[in-house]
Image 1 (cartoon, rainbow, N blue to C red):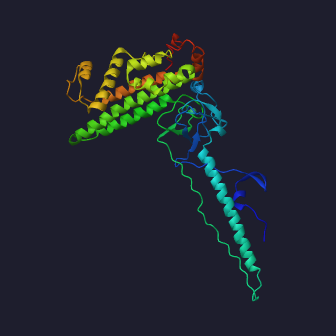
Image 2: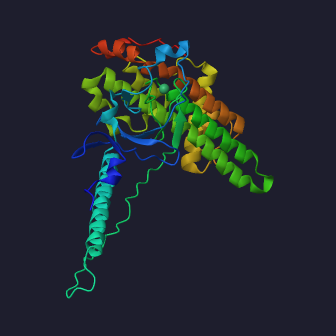
Length: 375
Ligand SMILES: [Zn+2]
């Protein structure tokens, strides 16, 4: 009988002694080949994101140098939701540690069972034939199935436009987890592309399906404001935490924010606390179009598209009780205006910009960052 060995475990051995092996196991991957990551920053909500591969030959373009927070590659990871930077190890997902522990346990048990089965076979083979007493060793392995680990992809799947790292988050994030560049505009461009696809779907329907086309168009229109509101709220919360940490809890309270970012004047007032006016880049005409479309969204979302008095007064087009018109081109323009604002807001997420503004945080209303619109 040969010595006992953990044959399965030894295949994963990367160092150590036979009695105390160092093992290395691959981390489970999602169907698209990404691995789970868990932000060590407890303030990041949510904390799960996925990170994938990047092309081997990638390089940061000179014009993007000032956007990155770190040289992309192994070593550190950036939380895409909060910008928190920490060693890669701190982002390992607890579920992956558990999955690998289970894998090691299963393989160790299977190695022991193989050994016991071989021992029994060896013992039986060595029993003398035709003896008066017959002894047989019977070993029944447990035959537990190999633990199965399933990792799912998240819906929002992107590739950083600066370092080309693939990653996935829940709906929206602010930074690339690899190079740390602000990726807010990248997210919003995806929203605009989705809206354009919905408009194309609505336009492709024939006249007999006009009601469905109107509903699809309404959803596309509504999605623009939802995405815009989410982007503004996410940036605002982040900047308040970084620049006004003492007031962050009060300013970011749910009842304090409510649906303020669905309203130009209230959003302006919120960002004013940070010395930022997100709407300053728009012409009066564009601002008017934004106002009308925000109001239109309320009518579509809450009133099945039927104009109310406030809407009729604002637009001077439909009468109260009439269905508001929805034209794909106008929705596209609405989305583009929102993208313009979001793109203009993105540089506020650059580290040096945040640090400079945070150092003046004792006088938050002094407008330290006002007028900085590097788009
Ligand atoms: Zn990147």
